[in-house]
Image 1 (cartoon, rainbow, N blue to C red):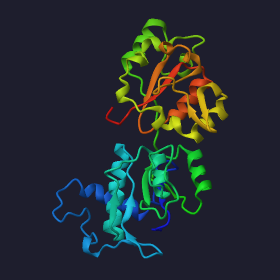
Image 2: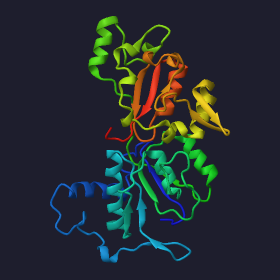
Image 3: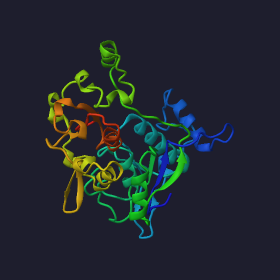
Image 4: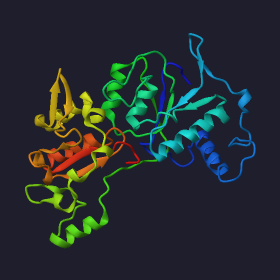
Length: 313
C-alpha cells in the first residue's frame, strides 16, 4: 500500500466472470460468515495475523502511521470499510484507522480523502496538497462522478488516487417518490409521476401533489454555502451543459448555485414562484444534486433542490 497516495475500490463496473474471483473476495465471504457466529479471540478470521504482529506504513521521511480507511456516511460504506479494514489487518498484517469521528459526505469526499486533502467534506476548500495522505483506501466508492475524478487527477497528479476496479457488484440509485402521491396523481388526472415527462411544466403542475418547500424546517437543511451549490466546478458544469446562467451567482470569478433563500435552488420553470416547485431532498453535501439540476432545466421540470443538514434529518 503506497504511503503517498491512496487507492479507490469502486462498486461500479462489470461483474467478474464465474471462476475468476480473487482471494480477497473469498476473504470477504469468510469474514461475513464469521460475523454470524460468536468470536472469542476478537478477530474475524481463525488464522488472523495477531495484533502484536501487525505493522504500520512507513513513508520516505520515516514517519509511521496505520493504513487509513475512509468511511462515507451511508450504510454500504460502513459495511465495506469495516470489512476491508478487517482484511487489511488480519490477512495483510497492517494496522488500520477509520474516520469514525469525521465521516465523509459521500464518494467525492472519499476521492479527496485518499488524495491527502485534510478537509474532504468542505466543497469550498478541501485542503489539498498538505503533505502525505493519512487515508489510503476507500471501498464502495461510486463511479458516478467522472468530472470530479478527472479534476483531481489533473490538479493533483502526484497524489491522485488509483482506481482498483469493481467491488464485484453494481449499484443503482434513483429518486424516491412516495406511493400514495403517485396513486393520487394518477387517480386524479392520469398523471404518472414515475415518468419524467409528467413533470413538464408546460403541460402539468406536479407540485400540487407535494408539500410546499416553504413548509420545510430550514434548521434541518444545509445552507447552500456549505453544500455542492458552493462548488465552483459543479456550478460551472451546470451552466456549460444547460446554459442556465440565471441559476448561478458569479462572485470573484467563482460560480455558486443561486439560492435566493439560502437553502433551495429553484429550476427556471418555477424560479419566479417557489409555490409551483416540488422539492427534491438529498443528503451528504448534495448527492445527485447536480444531476437533478440539469434534468430540471433540460426537461422543464419545476423542481427545487435542497440538501438535508445531516443524514438523520
